[in-house]
Image (cartoon, rainbow, N blue to C red; front, side, top):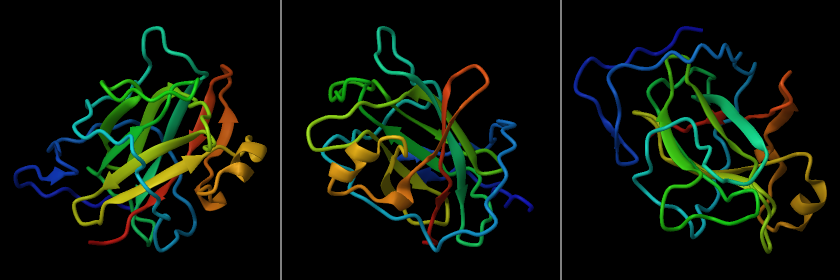
Length: 193
């Protein structure tokens, strides 16, 4: 599967972020799925979205609480082609279910590489009243609509069942690395603009 080349013109603005001309090569080697959906289900951004997050892939915070988590995946078109240079902006609560609404703890954005891949180092979010643990996501490619959604964890069945907006098609694939680190993968399918 060949990556779509980026235009050589000036960088574009996605979700308010200036997209870089040069893309990082994360070397993740994530295999794309055999089939893609017409588009990932959208969900509410909730009351806690903050624009203009820092560009970073490591969201670990000094003194932060929560189990370490690698959150990775691909941004794809409905025909499973990578969306290089797309922005992915995430935010979530800390391990105790608290959001930072004054700063940028557990908030950040990055741009996908030529394979459409992203990877964040963060922590597993905690639950809070009425909600199962989840990660909020906004994503947009140069030629796609903005996707606003949330992803969930499959090992929290009871909490998921009590959350009124939980959807099982938004479950991450969850496992542990050889070092015992949690790893969550979700491939987002972005609809054309």
